[in-house]
Image (cartoon, rainbow, N blue to C red):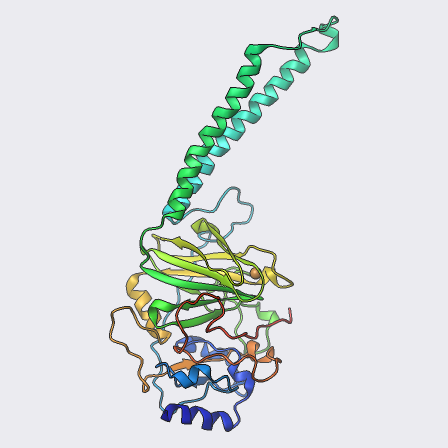
Length: 390
Ligand SMILES: [Cu+2]
C-alpha cells in the first residue's frame, strides 16, 4: 500500500502521460543511452510484486521513479551471423533450417516435391515435343481417327493418383509432427500490434517486452538509437529481441491486439496467423544459438513492412541472465522481485515523440504486474504508442 502511495504521489508530481505509454522492461538500460535527457526520464515502476491496486489503476504516469531502485544486471546481446537466419540477396530456395520441423519440411520440399515437380514437368514437355514433331501435318497427312484407348486412359488416371499419394504420405507425416509438439519447456505469448510485436513471458513472472523496428541512422533524431550491423540487417533489426533458450521446446501462443498479423520466422519453418480474440499455437526447438529474423506475413496496414521479428536464441544459462535483466524470474527459482528490487521501465525517445494519444488511454500496467496468458489476447497489454511517422 505504501508503494501505491509513492506511485500516486509521483504521478501527481507531474510525470507526463506519455511517459506511461510506451514502457519497456528492466534491463533495457543497456539501451538507456538512447533516452534523450529531457524527453522523458527513465521511469521505474515500483511494481515487480503484483499489487492489485496497481494493476487496475490506469492513471497516466503510473510508471513512477522509485528512489534507490537497484539496476538490473546488464545483458549483452549477440550479433547475428551473416547469412544465417536472414534472407540472402540473390539466393534461391528456403533459408537454412534450425529446427527439427524445419529440417523435415525443407528436406520434403527440396528432396522430394521439387524433384517430383521437375520430373513431371520434363515428362510433359518431352511428350509435347514428341507429339509436335512426330504428328505434324507434313509427316502425317492422314490423321488418326482414334478416340478411345482403354490402356492409356487407365494409365493417365492411375499415375496421377499414385503421385498424389506419394506427396500426401510425407506431407501428412510432417503435419502430424508439427501439430503434436513435445511438452513445452517455455511458453511465450506473442502479440501482434499495428505495427510492432510484443512478447510476454508468463513462465518467468509475466514480464512483457515491446519490439519495434530500428530505423537507419539518417532516419532518427540526433542522439536516438539507430540500427547498427550488430542489431541485424536493415528493416529486420529490432530494439528488443524475442529471446528464447536453445535446445528447449518453446511454445508460442500467438494472438493480436487489432488486426490479423502473422508471426513468421523462415529459418524455423514457422508461420502462424495472429488473430484478434483467438489464441493460435505453434512451437520451435532451435538447436543453435544465434539471431534469426522474420517478418509479419499478413498484410496488416500501412506499416506492415516495418514490423520485423528478431529472435535471439541463447544458451539456457544466458536465458536465465536475460530473464533476470528484465526483472523476471526462472520457474522454481526463489522470487527475486521484492518491493526493494524493482523493475526499471525505460522509454525510448522515438516512442515518446510519437505518443500523442489522449491521456488515460494508453497507460501500461507496471512491469511484473500483468496477468498470465488469458483468453482474449489483450489482457496486460495496453495500447502502446508506436511510431507512425514513417
Ligand atoms: Cu502485421
